[in-house]
Length: 431
Ligand code: PLP
Image 1 (cartoon, rainbow, N blue to C red):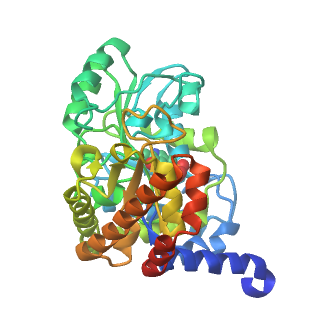
Image 2: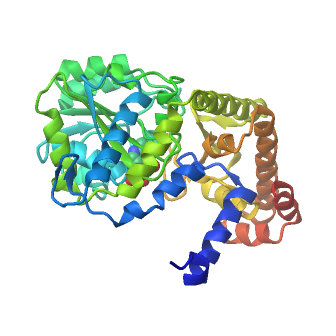
Image 3: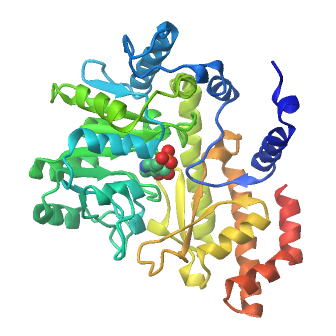
């Protein structure tokens, strides 16, 4: 046995650099978090060596007695973390990621070219919910299925539930998908269930972003209304990178078999047992009372950040946030998300450019997305969020000053930003 530092100092060095980057800067990417050391230990364990195609008790390989225990434990903890009755709900813990969890779900319950409706990408939806552009079908979910996205109301930024209901009546979807990656408000599942029921459609919720908040019961509960709930495990849930599919067993006796067969062998091969161990550890933590405190703090932090930016007169999508993320509309400032993302990188603040509803170009989106998960996991509270908001306000002020001097072209802007004294100072202050 040779430790990594001796076996491969190059990779070791990159890991050390990335560790330094994650902890010395401010991490505001809404889809990221800082998972626990215990989760990382499980995820980096010897379980990576084992093949175990199939399900507990029914594998295609020998030597799976401990892997069976592990997968069953993970399933039990997944149901417990979301307070689900095992007689009503089942869960598949094998999906490699959120995208594969979603595609396996479609494979299980749809036929090719069936109709689906998900929240449009410019409205804060996710690629895997049927995204396409005028020129091209981008996601496999729009290549293999007919997709007709619903949108938010451009004035309020809130989902246009009425428009969705009317369009569903025309389009007649087989599957209605809720959930998104840049939607800062809670969801009205009762209303969505009404629409799905009126069409005899399945209702699926992809709670990838908010699953930690749902587990802690600080967001509405999609399990009350949905047939299927999918999630990633690495965002607010704070586990390793993977996905889960929860399905109702009580309404359709065949659902369990359909979901399991869609994950393996239809979409995947052998489960990543090291990851399943990491998920199990994270789910144990999610059932602990401390997790509820963390999830509550995420929401308080998000509100504190939104209040500070709102107070300064900046435009936030929906004027605030109910969850872990804020979508900041930079268009009134004549700045783009790309510029702010780059300038924040220089100051060691990590966030991402994001389309805001009504954006004309996806290449130069008019907003940025801020997420509070990672900073909350570092123990930050409302007063820290006010400080981070002040850093972001300095970024805006510097950007406006640079833009007024060099004009709007991104190359000129970045060149001026690199040598700007204010940004150098900000970088030092952030660290
Ligand atoms: N679903 C939603 C709502 C997401 O936000 C994401 C990722 O950001 C995914 C699915 C895809 O997850 P993954 O990157 O694990 O494939």
